[in-house]
Image (cartoon, rainbow, N blue to C red; front, top):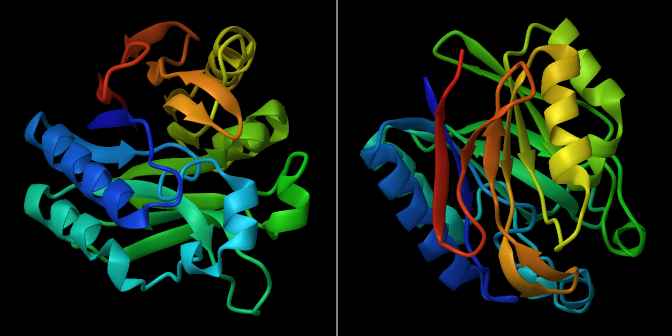
Length: 238
């Protein structure tokens, strides 16, 4: 199976524009054989917790019609997509930092809410309480979001649960040490393929510099999308 770790520069608060870009990336990655495409943290709004806090219109639902172009792209190329944004909870609490996994038929495969919120995120979002998992074509996937990856027990549980691929939606600013000390370690220590999607450009996190990538189970980087190009890193996994 081929996975794609996609990257772009989201437009702050513009869900429609970010959905269009996401759908285009899914179509492009699918045309190159990707069966799963993972997008960055809060790619649907940009990493803008303050804006999300002040703007209820940026809050999504699981069946939100604004995501229809993404569902159509998944169906068009037969790929699943991990799309992340502020998605309301069923309990009426503030939104989670949520990965919705849309299957090759456009339907919802699973939902994962970031369990380890960081800084101001704690005032804006609701933390999740459960691990994220899905299976496609016999391969089991685990989900994690940015700061989650600082906690190795998530990857440890993923490996114990039979996962082969660990998908990380992230927003990493220039100089973040995660590229060297976190993602390759999760891969190497637990025998996983790790696919990490990052943004580039400016956001509330600061300046980010892409380098979405895939690490093999030996911890070696096997694909890199580069620093500032809209696109994706492709790698065969499993």
